[in-house]
Image 1 (cartoon, helix red, strand yellow):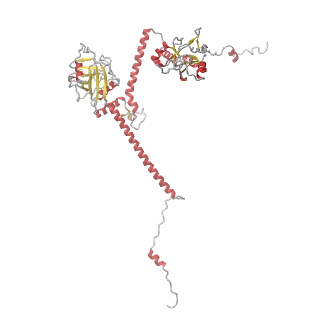
Image 2 (cartoon, one colour):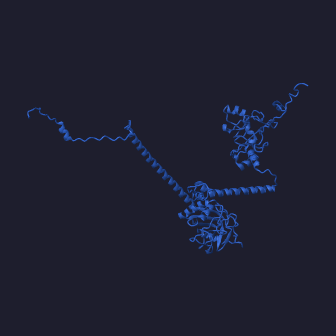
Image 3 (cartoon, one colour):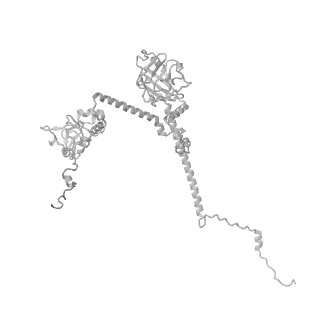
Length: 517
């Protein structure tokens, strides 16, 4: 038996064996997908009435016109176009029914460089246009002799730019793929599809309304970061509980939407301004005065809904002659309507304004603190409604229109037999906007004063700095060793001028002798 007879029997595959035996993952070859020049870029089918967009994509006129009317864009590029931007193309055919150049008679293929003339719509090969128009500077159509410019040459196909003909990259194809991915991958009947589509629309509308409500309620707090009048309570909690992180300072909490609204209403009361609006109906106009000085919440709700067009097209669904007329419900049933805050708001009962006369504007509700969008106008004094409904305005013009409305006949359920429709509500004076402008002016004035104070402070600081530099420079002028020592100046010795004068005179002494002995 030979030695090492199994020496070449490896227990593994070598790289060459793996490659040769097909163990590696083979590269997948995908066929190149390019739209032929004779096909519509929208339907991907051969066209019958060809037109071209300004970008050079060819379409079938029958199919592209509805698409452009609906979307207003080029199906291939997604750019904005209109129907008048489309150019009708005139393709020439030979005896075999093949598209060809009408001058050189060369057949068009998927690799032919083709162009069209915008003014005539005739299609040529680029070689023909270049040699007979561009080079000799002959800017007239070769068949019709119509004048054109270089900008009127539309490139339909360029073999060097084949990527633009890949229909998978067309805008409408990408949109269809995205929509298909978003749709649920379940099989349903046509009835189920309708139900699901309706449910989806309702869900989207509900989500949109919730977003609008949250934006309305939190917009002021998020933009201005208004502080509340109350603290966060963290310091008190840390003082009474060891589980809370110790706090040594009281911090004001951020105001919520309710506090912000109450502060605004307090300012509106202090502003002491009235609001004015006009309800335009199919039976005449009703001019309103709104009591912002007493009921700012109800007035702001009414006037904001009016500015948004909430009441436009609604009807007065309830009419009782000699009592009142009620409206403000978009559903027309008396059970609908929403406030601008998305929830019912509180009553604003005032003894100053009551249901004491004809033409009183008051909030309709279904109980205490359930005000939304519905309101009513009285035809006569209604003292039994006092302290139950918020009186927030009155009629100051259009009494004849109110008389015509009251004269309308009703059915046994107090519903007018003739439709009384609110066409629109016009707002003339809105104290909420006046308050916002006033606050903005105050903010700008405060900023201006702060800037002036900062500028004055900067000038004073610069003057102090300049004075200090001058003093330092003066002290350095007496420089030398020991310039920072405070050495006292030597005292000057005062002399007596008379004594000095006497000393200055020289006394001549007599010669000494022994005569006195």
